[in-house]
Length: 165
Image 1 (tube, rainbow, N blue to C red):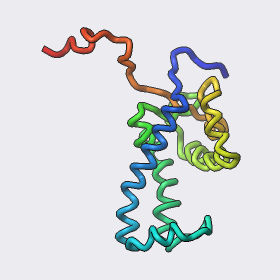
Image 2: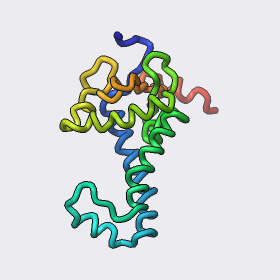
Image 3: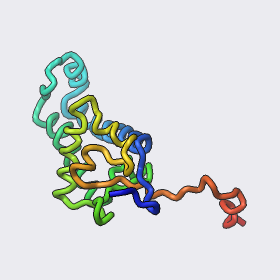
């Protein structure tokens, strides 16, 4: 499928910024819970542990593994975007209908992130070079990420301040 001229695709840097914002927001929300549940020693243990798949406890695995997946999928289905994507004026949509993805499609997209990350994150880097700015996970799930924000860059100052009296 060729790019459509009236659709603004969200590019690599916009999507990377959204990912960083999501990571920060999730970390800011989850860190106090981990400290309440496990105390500050949790972070020292995590720093010293070299096992990639080690968990401090059941709540650790639920809060740091399961919860993010559930939240991401729910945000995509219900809002069309995670909080970071919303802040960056992005929306995840079905490539064919341009509507928010359903549960099955969003779940596939979420698990396809792992495939995009397997080989040095090349599946994500693909976004920078693709005509429709799709990563490998987007192609597998048949989704697009659109830039839905208003662009005021070409408006004159007079036009932008016309409503102010």
